[in-house]
Image 1 (cartoon, rainbow, N blue to C red):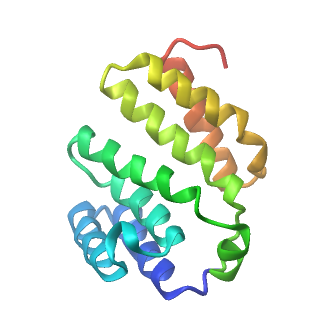
Image 2: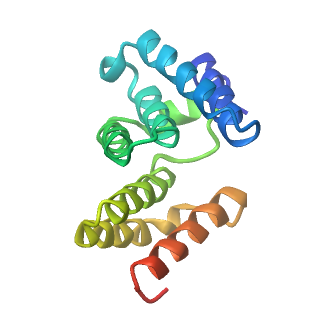
Image 3: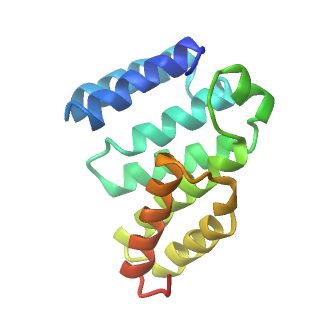
Length: 154
């Protein structure tokens, strides 16, 4: 359970989107949080998780890609200590497979299959950081679907 108030607000937006189907409301909440944290100048953990979540509620794949690239840029500045301090039950290494999965999917949608495959390979290389829990199975399933769409062997 997260103990970080900003992470809790981000989780509310994720719930609005995924559990309640309120994509526009989630996007509005994420935009407010983005302003509150100071955008890309904010806490790298907040920037990473918020940008990763904001990407999911974009209507335009170019905007989705922009947000996913922001998330990937920020994760390199996040430490395991910061993740633990925020109460996030995952290591920094556990964030990478999902980030690369989303980037691979964006590039696939844009027709840049070379970059899509690169991110698929990076995600596969880092999949060992995920547990055999609901989150790990979700990401692994997403990677299998992306591989099939790219005609890659699973």
